Image (tube, rainbow, N blue to C red; front, side, top):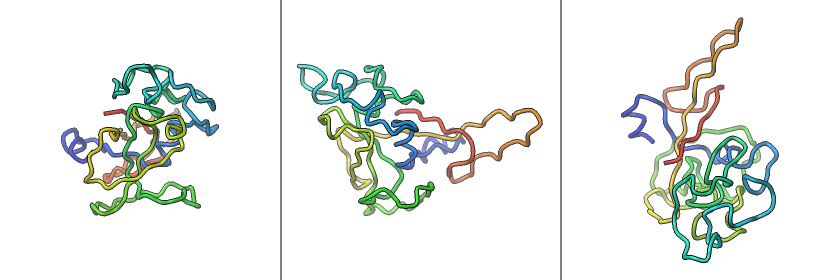
Length: 176
């Protein structure tokens, strides 16, 4: 994220795990992007087909798409988040941005993966790993705040902060 931000002069970053979860589950807290019932043919997961499981192009399973248009949250690869790992979700659900860069800090991974089965592919599933580890079923998704049009008669919104922290604008997710 830092390299892309430096090359493009735009505030690209990894999502916080709560941002990731809302983008996949929506406001109604569904188990999977399409609803509450597991259907392996809708995502790149271990049970998707009779052939051996493998990673897929992000739009190979169009039904693995959230109400916000975010694809691949149930299968394909789990995704790094910028959040430090916590056993339980934070009690205070206000978004906290953590900027630690220590390599020995466990980071949150979210979503399902091409080698995982149903219970491990729910939108609320959480895993953990160290940032220096490289895993076949772990990828990332970058996001940045997009400016919103200013309604007539309203003052403009402030631009995103230089450190990439969320602003009161809209957030767009782009898989990589």
